[in-house]
Amino acid sequence: MSQPTAIEAEAPRTPFPSLPSDPFATTPQVPDVREVAERRPRRAAYHRDWIYRRALAVADVAAAGIAVLIGVPILGHDTLNPAALLALPLVLVVGKLTGLYDRDENLVRKTTLDEVPTLFWVATLYALLIWLAGNLIIQGEFGRDQAVGVWVLLFIGMVAMRTLARQAARALSREERCLVLGDAATAEWISRRFAETAGLKAKVVCVAPLEGGGLEDLLRLERIERVIIASRGATSDDTLDTTQELRSRGVSVSVMPRLPEVVGASVELDDVDGITLLGVRRFGLTRSSGALKRAFDIVGSGVGLILLSPLMAAIAIAIKLDSRGPVLFRQRRIGRDGVPFEMLKFRTMVDGADAQKSALASLNEADGIFKIKDDPRITRVGARLRRASVDELPQLYNVLRGEMSLVGPRPLPLEEDDRIEGWQRSRLELPPGMTGRWQIFGSARIPLNEMVKIDYLYGANWSLWLDIKILLRTVPFVLARRGL
Image 1 (cartoon, rainbow, N blue to C red):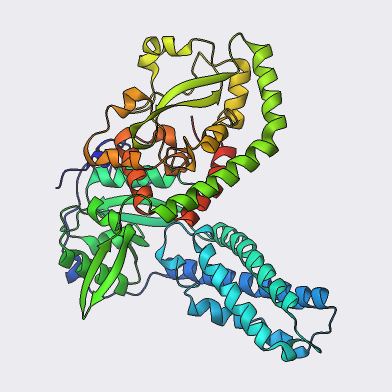
Image 2 (image 1 turned 135 degrees about the vertical axis):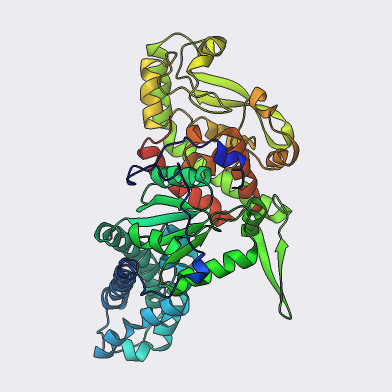
């Protein structure tokens, strides 16, 4: 059995409670999956896909109905032709052409946010087609304002309706039962991340080696609907053979790539007369991307400071009345290119709390960073600020000054930055962020060495839409108070 990576080795050794015995105690020995005879596709998986497809189709038609049957008459004060009803199923054709109904069956986490760029183009193409068929839709002239109205209403409607549809489909579907083909430590790590991910309805129930035997019995007895291939030592041929065999049996398959392949998320597919090559993108930002990100930060932090200034003033008064000391807590953090800066926060602890840090080292609950859930140094007002997640609002000023970004790598104190070596220091090519992937993944639960890998992948895959997605996902994370 291959050794787990650093990420896997730090997962807590907790057996899956759904199994009658510890699945990690012994590894099942069964015939190779390639020797397993064909079986009928699993009804549970197909039923789940059926629910999601139909729910999304209904959501899209409902959004088109709002855009065409309600939006067009209101915006143009015109009368609809009966043929306007034929425009509603047209959205299904456009959605199918863009693959909107084929994604969810391949995904463990089914989310509308990831497909917003595609929905943008679907709404654009649909509005164009409706505009071209204007005389068939209304009795009169189909104008520019109506076309824009259809586009806006359809885009917003599809995002909202699809979000509701997925919530309904998730409630109607059973929990997806997953088998990990790999080692025990990897399976434990995946199981823990599944449990910590909001809106995920999947559970790892057992583990087996890719090269082992008895897979047919394991799939049947444990009612497996998805297999996650996470074998570190597997060859491409082994993985491909296993994947094709499982898919032919109606079992969903996900492949967990190794770290060099994870960076493949930041590659461009290059087909040279049948030779598939992966062109790896540069790490960090080009000059134009950096300018775009900076403009986004300036607008976002400026608007945030203006809108939140009354709240920040009230917080400052409350801190001053509650305990002695300054309103703001200033801490030196490592910024872009390794240049230190003073990061601002509302003071939530007693004055001089840093001096007590060494005495509380035994209470630290995180690996590589200092985090205590019930820190005794926190003041009464500070506890409320942390629960409401508003203690970091002064960092908007750091963003406006260019010392930080709205989204980026986690800003580390000097002593934690000293532990970052080698390729991991490439994270410093980006400005640190008020939030980032480390935040929405559960910042206090992620070990330091895993956090720097997350930061690296953020820099390798940066786009403005990625920043927007992280900001949008930070909101429910903060409201759910999932951090320490």
